[in-house]
Length: 111
Picture 1 (cartoon, helix red, strand yellow):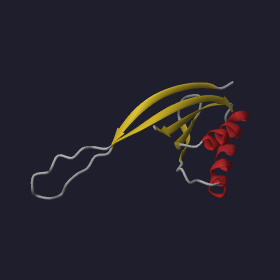
Picture 2: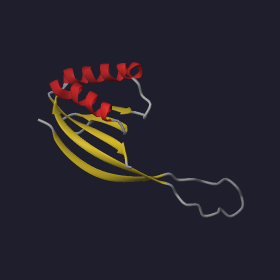
Picture 3: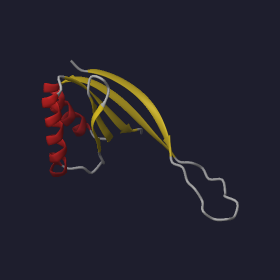
Picture 4: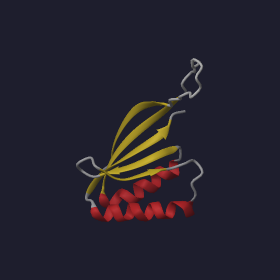
């Protein structure tokens, strides 16, 4: 059983100036991120993670246990290839062996 919940968050990058002159007002760049939550059982965890990575456009992947505590948090970039994913997938497989039910939170770049 897989359930999906979508939310949108906004993060802002802050800048600081070290000059003694009065700082100039600068526009803060906004980066939009969309998060999705998937509830999966432990035996379907690895397959769902592979499916999410194949879809692309994933910024970060967080796997949480039933209580909502993050067990593994993996930042992903657009150019990640199979060889670089092997250790991540091994870690996800180890987590899958330990949990019966978990939540995958996927943070995607907003287009």
